[in-house]
Amino acid sequence: MADSIFLGGGGEGYGAPQGLALKYANRHGLIAGATGTGKTVTLQIMAEGFSNAGVPVILADVKGDLSGLAKPGSPSHKLHDAFTSRAEKIGFADYCYHACPVAFWDLYGEQGHPVRTTVAEMGPLLLSRLLELSEAQEGIMNIAFRLADEDALPLLDLKDLQSLLVWIGENRTQLSLRYGNVSPASIGAIQRRLLVLENQGGAGLFGEPALALSDLMRCDTAGKGMINILAADKLMAAPGLYSTFLLWLLSELFEELPEVGDPEKPRLVFFFDEAHLLFEDAPKALIDKVEQVARLIRSKGVGIYFITQNPADVPEDILGQLGNRIQHALRAFTARDRKNLKLAAETYRENPRFSTGEAIREVGVGEAVTSMLQKKGVPGVVERTLIRPPSTQLGPVTPQERAAMLEASDMAGKYDNPLDRQSAYEILAQRAQTAAQDAETSEVAADEAPQPMAREFNAARRYSGSRVSRSSAKAFRKKDTFTSAMSEAVIKELKGTTGRRIVRGILGSLFKGR
Image 1: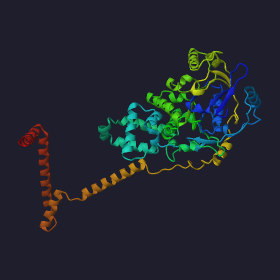
Image 2: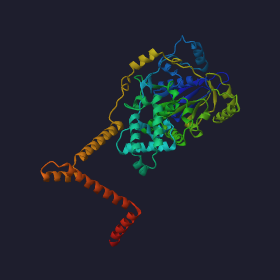
Image 3: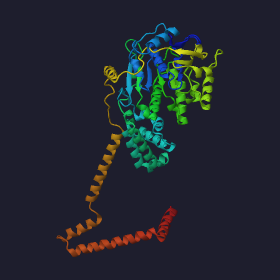
Image 4: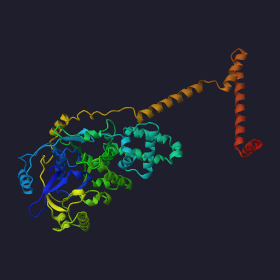
């Protein structure tokens, strides 16, 4: 089955061997099932299969178990006998232990190479989703990005965005005339959300050097696809950051990769674990964007596989695009569970030999109900399948082994040290400093310039040819006081009702004469 990935087979009471055809692997898929039914092992063997076929893989390691892909399985493992027995039962004659090429990544830079992007690349829509902004606050975020584009203010990290928001707050009166109301309360709310993001460790996501997508689409010297493992056990404490980052990564692939039509195998496969986090409380605009990406990205040779507990976690419009499906057991203890089970069974092409709903409820750990795309992309009949055992280590590698792999990686050193080049923060700070210096210079010049009264006083002093007496200075002060009083009286009168009538009469006569 060189043109497909062997997933499992049957035995007594099971169907024919099941394989995922590489030609249709970019038409996306779903791995679903309750906790503890074998979803992680299924993800592991699929990643192995794609890597062996020369297809790079991106996946998130939510539980910390998938790092074992970097090491071969061991005959001393407690499940070795069970694995070999399962392989013999399903006809997996080529079963053996081997490792896969792996690259470790981590948004926090602790368990893998650091992963960064810029604020500008994230964009206002995804950033607003990450910060959980309201519609009014999202509007201000869009204004910030527009101003950054128009004024050539690079938004690279969070301090760039924070500085730009401060500038918007200081100039909100002028900006409101152009873009609509800019509320100080909304700006303050965004700043507080940015503070929460920093406290969650999200500040490390933004900056340079930004992740190059080409580093995720590599093969090793033997032609095996690199498996890129994102450490997500700590990241799951901030589910919004987790889902937004993976969605950004998916969007970047969609934007940058060229069209390839229907390739013989995918250029890249993307596994989205805990997919329900992507769609929970997501605005319609975001769900529409995911649907658009899922529909169009397959023509760029990218396959997306959602992993979740229940197919109902995925919106129906997106679920309909997932042609390759592996359904592990679902529990049906409550009325809601039974409803979800029924809905899940209805999404499969029926097999007359058994009830799909009963099969989904009855399959054990390491078993699944599967339906793969066949010739011309037609969904296959649903089958009960024994999932094949993994060839790589079941369980995580040790911290020492991970550290050694990171040191030996060809990505070592490329992303370790952050860069801080001139961007919006530095540009706005320089402008503020220049404006302050100009204001100080103008104030000094105004203080040094002789005032009209001072010129008159100095002229009198030069005329007398001697020091002005106290009586003369007093006379000047009296004159100045009298003049000021008269001026204030005239201005006060002009501000009154009579004064305004006089001014209107004068101006009216002038314009009428013209």
